[in-house]
Amino acid sequence: MTDSTRLAAGDTAPDFTLTDQDGASVSLASYRGQKVVVYFYPAAMTPGCTTQACDFRDSLGSLAAAGYQVLGLSKDTLAKLASFAENDHLTFPLLSDEDLAVHRAYGAWGEKNLYGKIVTGVLRSTFVIDEAGLVTLALYNVKATGHVASLRKKLGI
Image (cartoon, rainbow, N blue to C red):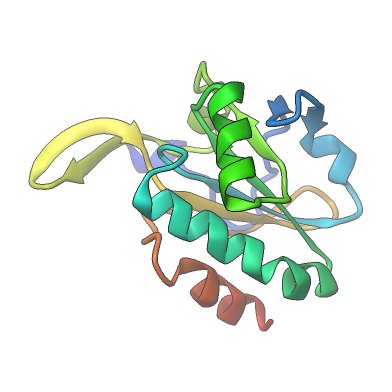
């Protein structure tokens, strides 16, 4: 993957419409006028992704108070996302991008080093999108543990 496919601050966030864990259609465009945190994670119900999702869940109050909505995206099936939401009491939309179109549009799919091997997969990434639909933060290859606290610090929350 080349850096040219990656988003940067000031870019227009690629729009998308995906289905959430409850079967509802969710469009990024419907969040215009609000700030949104869109994060991509490799797989529901794995240790790192559970830690990250629970950190977002536990920070929803402070993020919402600062005007941010949270959307989680993965390549998981709707059934797996529904189980993930139920098991971990996740109350924000978890969106299924099984064909990886949105992952690719955001540069969140590509080569990464996994335990010393180069593999192709989901790049754990987070994007902050402003009220006009512009990217204000594009964070690639973030760590699951401590990421939400780091993000909140960057956002001044």
